[in-house]
Image (cartoon, rainbow, N blue to C red; front, side):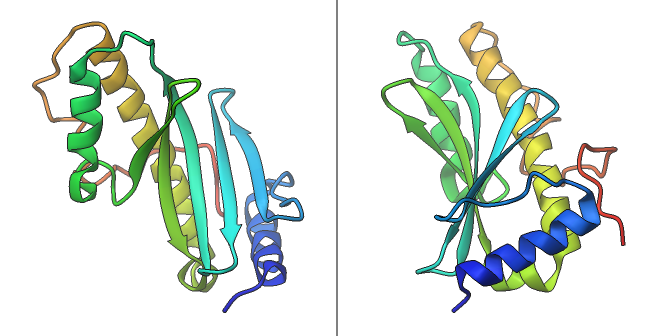
Length: 164
């Protein structure tokens, strides 16, 4: 089972390849970094399970958010259909919608480039969902599935870069 020291060593590898010097966890294995002044990506190492939980706050819902918003979030999360295997949660005091994705530590450590690529894909996914949520809040139904997260997320220029 991987340890917090293994996680720190893994993040050191990621730092070297991306230049993201802020990827240093606290004593509990949590780190947070801001991307494009828009999203905070949080990574939490869970030593008991050997997983890395990635979570990103997507939106804060008004207290009178309609059923369409919740229906879309729940429907999109069903079997990871529109969430690329992740899932949504909501912090009830602030009504903040949070996207969660679990990495298997051993798989992430075996392929750091894929780990970084997945983080980039998560950023694209949360952008899609932020737009979907805002569309539902504005009362606009989005019948188009062109931006559906169940499709392969295109490889686009992104914020994080892996340098071999």
